[in-house]
Length: 265
Image (cartoon, rainbow, N blue to C red; front, side):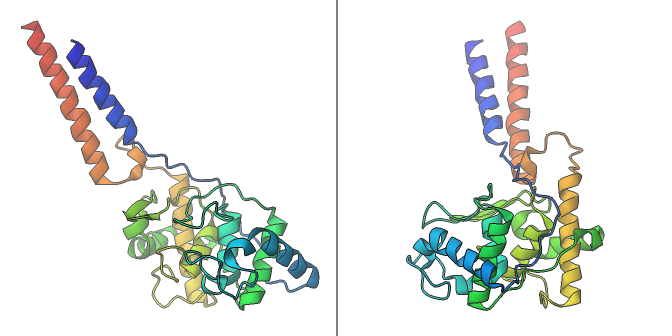
């Protein structure tokens, strides 16, 4: 009986370890105004924030070399959209100069400060565009097809995210906003290519804007409709972990039943 209880406890521990935390940071489908202002006050505020919070790693000039080889120069990351995406989602300022900065969190700045900072960097590097997006104008069915072609290989069709090998991780799409989607597609953070795999993507072209709207609509649907008819979703990580849990739990329970029946005979 003691061995049986130990076996059962081990199965329970394995099941708990296989359930990943997939709750993303909160974020609706709201779209913030484009950070294209060039007013003197906004630029001055943005420069002050940059020098105080960003220059120690990225260098005093956004166009210049960074202070660390592992930190990219801001002229290469995607302009105002990249800064807005990283700072607004709490990914920056980062606590280390090494490793991937992918974890979302609470922003360290107010909306006005994020706007000023992204406007300043965008003006400095010559890319002030924050892409246009409106998930309400997107088509979920088209977005599902586009997402399957361009995004699902890394982020998973369920949006749960996935480890890509090494330190590279495709973060979950659950809890992200439409603006997060549009900015990530434009800038291509991490291992993601600029354009997000959308053919002939151009952020100011109406066809590309509609495609981004469609993908954003599908991502919004993922956040609203958790279709887990099979029971516990196990983080939506796909058939491999689900199959593994099924084997461990299923066979474990069968072993317990067989042992129990054996003791009765």
